[in-house]
Every structure is written in structure tokens, then in C-alpha cells.
Length: 233
Image (spheres, rainbow, N blue to C red):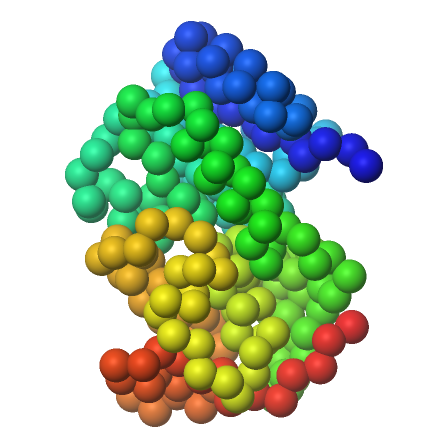
């Protein structure tokens, strides 16, 4: 079995070298990049399992890289940044990152976070990539939602992670704690807000009435229930 590939995008050579050595010692393959243009060029040929992305890049806004990566790639995204403000973390998660690590960090923490992402629903179960529910088709390989008329809309990796969680447990209550345990990341206000944003965007893409959603119901004080009839292929 081929070891998972971790791509590292950071403009500091010392950090790239430190992370690459630690990850390789832990059994991962790595690819390192100092500029966004090099990183994005490599993505046209190889899709990594996990991407570590710094926000302070010399040639591109790191958040723009994260957002594009979330929309176009199936890789897990972990931001590594010296920006420690809550709003920076929330923005990164809202744009599609799966996790956020603040510099300086211990490489052991990064390895643990990478392993957690690979254990999450998005990375492992690739046998079932198409779900059908209530006139909708969700294709997780291409990150496309198709309605009954054939109209398509894309969803991000982060949105897809939440949608897959719902589709794997239809008509069952999913608590915030269960979401945090399943999707990874640190519990707290930033995680809760990121989940709220992802669910709101999914509802919009599914044509839900925000005041009376039919598919993703909020059970106040408890969590969410997905009410659709789901079949996988």
C-alpha cells in the first residue's frame, strides 16, 4: 500500500524541511513548495492526501489558495499559520480548510492532525462516491450536486465532508460533539461557527427555505437531523 502523500506549502525553508523530515519519519511521503504557483502546478499532475498550507505566501494570498483547493481538490487541508486571531481561524475554516494549526508548533502535533484527517470520513471510504436523495445526486469524486432538472452546482471539500456525514446517518440525530469527533479539529466557538457556515451553504445549494428547511433540520440544543431518503452507489 502506498504511503499517504502530504504536500507542504510554506515560504520558510526551515519549516518545510522540519515538517518533511518529521512526516517522512512517521511514514508519509512528502512534497514541498515555497510558492503557490509551484504548488498549484504540481496539483495538475498529482493529488495529495493532505495539504499543509501557510497563509503568508510571497506570490498569492494563502486564503485564496485554500479556497481554490477546497473547491477543486479532494485533499484534506490543514492551515499552518502565525495568525492566531479567532477571526483568522474562522475565516480559514469557512473557506474550506479542515483544520488550523498556529505557529510555532510541535511537529508531533502536525503528524497527529494529519493522521486525524486521514481517519475522517472524507479520506477513507471511497467505495461509495455517489449518493441520491430526494431528487438530488451528490457526486463526491467531482464535488457536484445535480438536481432533478440536471442543473449542477459545486460544493467544497469542507461542505462535502459535512454532507457525507449527514448522508451516512439519515434520520438520526447528529450532535455537535459527534460532528467534532467525526470531522476532527478542536472543539470550540470557531469549530461551531465553521459548521454553521457549512450547513448554511449546503442548505442554500439544496434550495432549502432557511426558515423551514426540509432536509437538514436543526434540533435546538441537540444537533441536526437529515430527513432525506438516501441511496449510495
